[in-house]
Length: 488
Image (cartoon, rainbow, N blue to C red; front, side):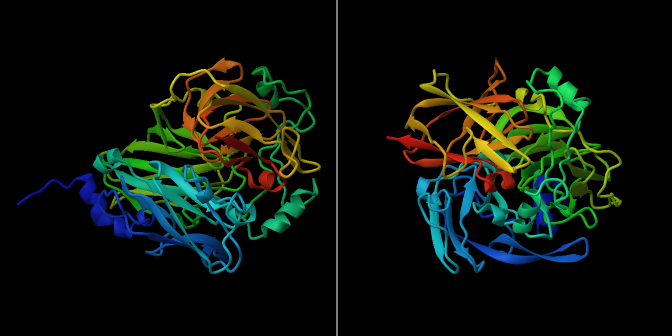
């Protein structure tokens, strides 16, 4: 007797041994669900042979994060086992405002030992969850939040979740103290281009009419982290995910780093970018795609009908460091990969060419905006201070809207660092790059390079206060946040 050994059967027989698939797969599709439990807790990692105590979000099976089935509600009990206050934001979701997970907006942080229940209908796609206390996110208090669609359930493909993070053995408080001291601070790595010259790549950026002044210095990386992690591991001991030869893979990749932009390099495999921030796009083929902190990429891969091993690498922009996982067939030979590449990866999307090429599969309806707002992004490395409309949180002027209004925000970055801007409680569409209108991707986090302008459109949702902030944690810590106040 024979049977077809499908990819779905292969997944079922191998998922138990694959760390990247260790998130709870859940039960068959359902419209109601029993409550799931998540614990904000401490855990230990081995990072290049050195023990590290970090934070995490542990599910009932002992893994990190959640996978929900089609039709399943986000019915979750969060338990604070950290011994300190915390609160978790469900990044990419649109919960009721009192479940959004921002301290005192409106709910307070959870006290040690406190539990809190959440219940809402989730958006399908690749999302994640993290503390909205920035120093805790820098201590790895983040995890995947995957909501599968009916299409995912029916597809004959293996899904692999990859969460990327940056890590330092130095405390966030000490990192911030060093970063504020300017050159010689120890933890700071400006990663600058054209220091004191105005030449090289800065000339190319200026040729794109971004408005930069000669001699200005662009900073890519302002912290040198001790490690760059892919599913909690480095390339000294990478995760090896066993796959089926000739199979199809869907990579769900999350940039949960505090301050690192990555390129995803699929190496010997041609990829198809099929979704960003959990929202489907017209597929784009390629072998290298970039994304900033808070953003997500869904990439499909078709594997050769042969034994082998294929690294999926995350390259730190403007630097040689890299991390990643290895896809390998049952008999595929796995070779060691150096955590330092021969050459530095380039800066990401300075001309916004990648963003300009994305097209939403389900764009917003066509309608005229009720109002347009210019959002000025600014700041300097010394003093280390980052602003929205020249103000920091607490001294901010909120953006106003009425529920149901179509709003357009034009982000104008006048600083020499990029800013991934995240809007809570809304899905927006990228509708402008510089002065050019586009029908771009749906997102919740948009990347604004130095001296660039990007316009987004959205329909104002629940009447409430919704945060708008940079997802670069040191920038957020220094106050780069404002709010969208929606009235009824």
